[in-house]
Image 1 (tube, one colour):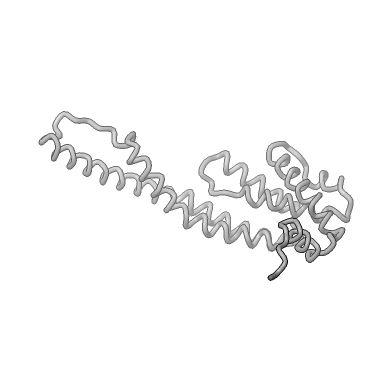
Image 2 (cartoon, rainbow, N blue to C red):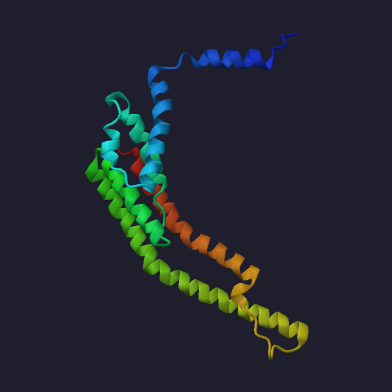
Length: 196
């Protein structure tokens, strides 16, 4: 029969296999979160990222930039309103400051801006058409159900848009319409993450 080992013994064995923590890993653990905090402050306040980065030692700046880049990239979203548009612009400006490959970054930003333009122009038309179509379908269904139950729909005025079922179906449809844009945007965000 084999020896029965405690969970602690098994865990200690696994820790030994991992080996010693390198100095680089320690720096990453400390300064990536600092970069994330810096990016969050940058998005909320009017900070100069280049000046703030100058406060860090050369050895750790790359980790700070890594953390800040992650947060800024995560904050680029479909321009559903003016607040999101402003946030996108600020995040993109911040990324231009952080990334070395300015041309590569600008090429990706150009593609992202194309998505945003399509989303706000053609996408808006698609959403309006889909909304009206869903509203018409729902109205017809409700009228048919009322006709079957009451025998008449005369004198009934139901605000379809306020019905929870309609709102839920609209949210599903909107998510479906936006998913195509989000998928492409996420692809470009991954490309941004890979750029130095």
